[in-house]
Length: 319
Image 1 (cartoon, rainbow, N blue to C red):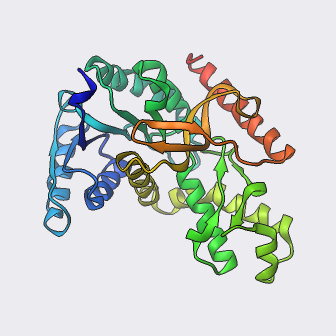
Image 2 (cartoon, rainbow, N blue to C red):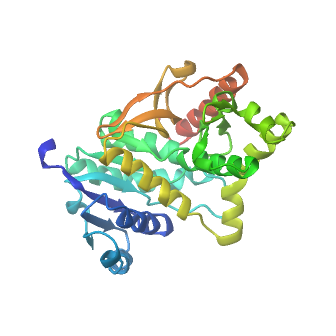
């Protein structure tokens, strides 16, 4: 199939669980696409979600939403993969790895068989390892395989900092980098509020215990998914909005800088593993990584995060 056959106004969502259906709902409301196909191992579940979401179309923009098969995805501009076993209370994202790599070994070859040439957006957890698996199994160019990465973690950090400083969270510029999981790093060195260094802004707002506050906030962000899962068994609204945001950057060729999971070749001395670093995202997927300013402690923590991911990838035969 030639690239000319890609339909820029079509999206596919594989997996109609909590995350997949919430993502499909967010994408319906976004107005980015005019066609959306939903695929699930349980065909009736996909049909039910397609019907339910379709009933909201009169309040949004025209869109053809339907349950389909892998034959319906070949011309989609973006395929969003949310399929996989869900994270249970007390379980880490990395605990899911073997189950979900096995699921991906059935899904990704089906996509590759159809000579797919669009963008593959991986959302299933553990997202860094599964993005790496999708890259290996799909044969797609590296820039066309993107993980949702720490886009949600970064939003959680901005939200928490906005609350802490009583300021609009959209004015907070900060990143969570590395693994989307327990070894993630808050990149405090490059954090600022509308150009004002974070510590300076904190002092303007009457906060002076920087080290203590940074540790508490980073831990809150790291543990927030566990807390949500403990309280309501799953997280899905935040990640659905993250999926919408990434799709927006691709469809509109925004060249936005987002901390997505992508293959790393030498940045900060890290090679051949997928993890989250800020990257320019546009119509061709990932244009380039942006090496933000990090101090020695943050670089060491990032390298440690990369090693954890490498060992996990090796444990399931991916490298």
